[in-house]
Length: 244
Image 1: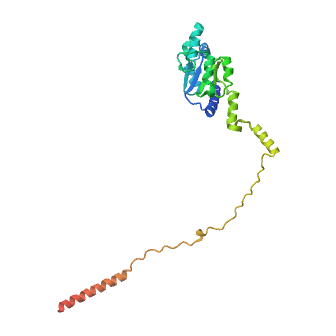
Image 2 (image 1 turned 90 degrees about the vertical axis):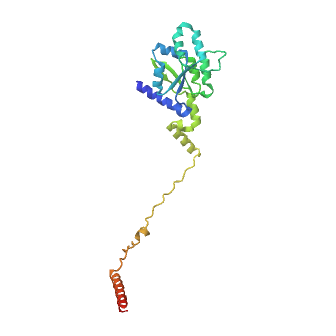
Image 3 (image 1 turned 180 degrees about the vertical axis):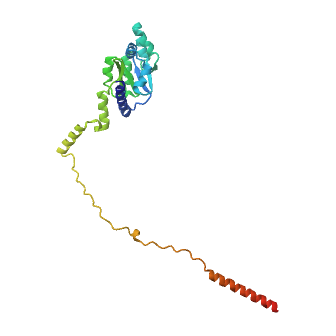
């Protein structure tokens, strides 16, 4: 069951990576309700969150969440201790704190520029976040952390951006058929394939190979005749000198 959940989470993460530019480390905004549910179900958030998302994460919260937990007293003291270990992100309510749900909702509005995940058990906040595109939602159910499927708002936005890539195949065929009936599609005339003609042999391959003649060796007889003549001339010169 665990492997199946991780495969599902991998597909959902791929959707947010390819369409909304989410990258590691994933920034997870947590509120007090999520921390309380993790404490109740004995879930180690720092250890299990990176394993479930199969990547590096940054667990964070806001000052409004911490102040809300302080105001709720002893009942959520354990959740407050957990939330205090996370990084605190700057929110626009530093001087005038607001409720945790209002604060987290403001952090992901305007197209969620900082690519936050929202981890909460608050049902009202969950409904509001599902109306925003490009905001991954997480919650705890049956002692496990779950990444919610992309909201209809997110899918609708991607369909507008990418055209018919997310339209089912049968719907694409229906649209194509309606276009043909209305004459919106020009019928393409099939092109005739050219027949390949059989060509003759390559003329270069028909040329006769030139015979390479071996280098001519000098005639030994001519050399011997020349050497005999030189000897005769030399001997005649010697005889003339001797008679003188």
